[in-house]
Structure formats: C-alpha cells, structure tokens
Image (cartoon, rainbow, N blue to C red; front, side):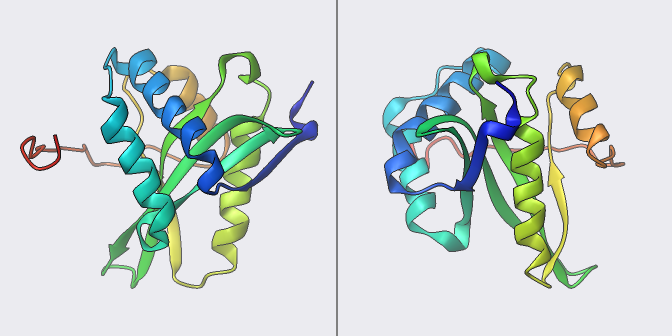
Amino acid sequence: MDATEITIELAGKTDAAFIRDCNRAMAMETESKELPLDIVTRGVERLIQNPAYGFYVIARDGEKPVGTLMVTTEWSDWRDGLFWWIQSVYITPEYRRRGIYRKMYEFVKQRAALDPDICGFRLYVERENKGAQKTYAALGMHETDYYVYEEELKDKKA
C-alpha cells in the first residue's frame, strides 16, 4: 500500500472520535502526556462545530481513517493575511512513512490557493523529532528565527 490509494478530505462530525484518539495517542507518543478524554472530546467537537476556529483534514484508506491534521489561523498585520497553523498531525503507526502527510499538506495548500487571504503556513515541532523536521523541510518549509513560548491558564478549562 502506498499513498496513491489514500484519499484526503475535510473531516466531519463522524470523524471526531478518531481525531480525539489520534490527539491522545500523539500526546502520549511525543510528550508522554495523558490528555483527559472529556477535554479532548470537547475540544475536537468544538472546532468541528466552529469553522471560524479552523478545520481538520482526514486521510482514509477506503473508509478507514488513517491520519489527521488540524489547521487553525493566525492574523498577520505585517502581511495583511492569515497564516494557517498546521497542528495535531497524526498518522496511525502502520501507515507512517508512506507519503500520507505529504498528501494532506498538498490538500491544505490547494485549499489555501483558493483563498487570497492565506499568506503562508506555520507549524511547530518537537526539537527531538528530527524525522518530522526532515519531512517538513523536504516539502519546502524552513525553520524560522522564532521560539514558541506559552503560559497555560490551567484553571480555565480543567
């Protein structure tokens, strides 16, 4: 099986459980974090119900979902446009290294080409995830001069 048999489309409500499970698996694999089922379920469903927040893309082998990613937006006043942030990328283990992320990224780029407000793509990746970094570079992305900082407001949603 290679990526030519894989279809890519926008995810819908019926994909929420698969996306939730992928998000939880990714957090465990990459950061050894166990994400609370109820919070992730609400988060996935909320994005699907609110297209202004972003959208999910899903890869399928026939009817079977095998990968997903999320796109959210960031307004850039410097460019008078929107960056699409690619997040929550997950391919099920048995389907990895078969070009599925490449197909999902091309799908996202094709959608962006239809919207004159989209000025580029961004993502963040774990420093130790050299395989993903090579994949992103091979697709034309490059490391920026910025670090990402955050402060979580833990008492807001838990």
